[in-house]
Image (cartoon, rainbow, N blue to C red; front, side):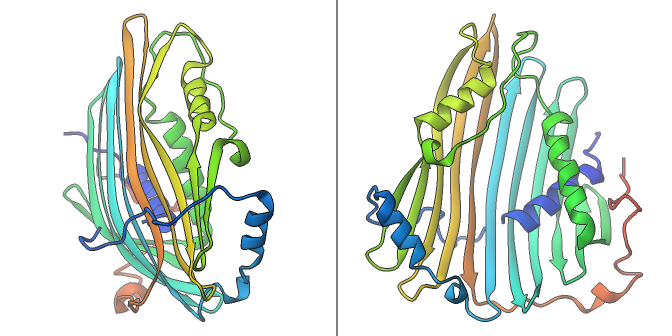
Length: 305
């Protein structure tokens, strides 16, 4: 059975492992509080009370956790993606080290059927991102210079927009408009400053209207409805002015139909960044060029296909 190329899978791994990142007792993405709608003056005063110099202890450890899935079906095919992972980062002055794990599953149907599964461990130091992964039945070890990650992530984002896109409404002839969100009008702000500061940003109807317009292109000929629409962002700073948690929760599902053809999509997940206390330890063999060689010149693993 044909698999996703390692190039595409590892681009995704780098994006998830370093960007956002399950244990049974893990904290929730939802930060509970007595939120109220603040005035502009109250919000400004609360934010100005935070001292950036005191926000983190010296050389803190940060823990990332993520669980995310996307499920799409359209006339020309289906697409499913699921990821779970954790990542701990230990700051060391101007640099950092990190270690974590990631599990990915993906499948699509259409002109061709593709199935992929990738699991593995990830590390970084001041120089490179290291990967020890199993892609299907193929095992890979290697490293990518941190200086090359930006280009890798940019290529992955471009791939997301084009390479795996399932046509929204085949043959509809309506192009989607670009989303250019304005946080002040598309998110409702909640503030709890009873003990420290808790902020909640919740996407409102203006945000979801923009999502609808991006799918339908503003055409009344396309029937559109949401089944779920939750997008929430949280920030918590304790009473001593120390960072506690930054998190996000998403549960977005909709259906669109045009001339008997339909698209269904659901995206669901949690992303949590918290202060941690576990020491980060890197394997001794990371410095061994034979154990962890540099990947090919373009910064990706060769495809096992």
